[in-house]
Length: 390
Image 1: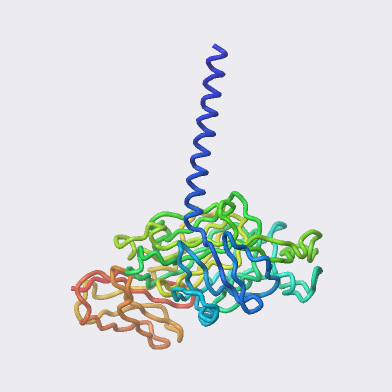
Image 2 (image 1 turned 90 degrees about the vertical axis):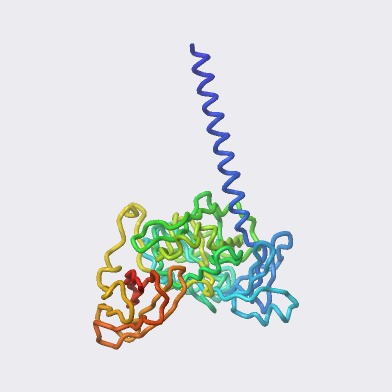
């Protein structure tokens, strides 16, 4: 009896280990499929490094990402295409910008570090003036926000929603990366989760989870890691340290976005594990518009629904409509705007409401019959309503 039970336990353990090995191999395959294999930056004018040809030069100051290679194609970021041409590199032109992660709501802790190229502080192998401890700017600095010489290590755990619009349906499945993520310190076995959601925070498509320690580095840099909390400025062992640089990329189809669900997308959601080391998360501005960080919640609050400032302050009448619709909206400011999107996510019109107005008339006579989305943007709020044209 004992031996039979013992055999069952051993068999169960073997099955568990086998299942975990299969799962890890599957995750590794996904991660490697998303891996960036080469980058070019403007460090010291021109710096190129990648898998199988790691540069012996290790950047120690500010430098922006000029291009990255993914699935055999080199894409420019729009920072300096002329630099690629002058060095004889073929590339597909692109335009990438860092997500506006300017407001980080998660609380920094003893593990949170501010990573700076070793000479950014002006001191070689030592501590310079203490850097500002506001984390957001380190994720958006440089041209297009693509500075590779600064980062936040162990970015505080939490959830961030970024308001998105104008996703181009024609770009689905084109193979061109729409999201680009950096990891420039020591990756752990944990992962951050990236996904799109609808206006109520419900997932659209599928999440993308990547274990970054399964991705091969494209290069290394030299950094100082300053404390983000406490009285200590720069701890022993965190000066002039070498760290690997990794990047991964993905297009819409990787997130399960397709023609049937694209019109439901309202937010890009990032769930931070608390162990990621990010210089920036970038997006392809030719395929999507990202407007603002809306909120960040501690992990224990993830089950809560999003706050109310969507839909409730916007009304459309008549609906269905044929010639003109009347929008009732919050008191308009100079930066407010009204957008109308087709069911496939393409912007068909844009209007600027009169400052101080609470109602705006929108002509729709020229629009083909069908279902549309009306988006009103004000400050960091998105107000949406469905509109039917007869």
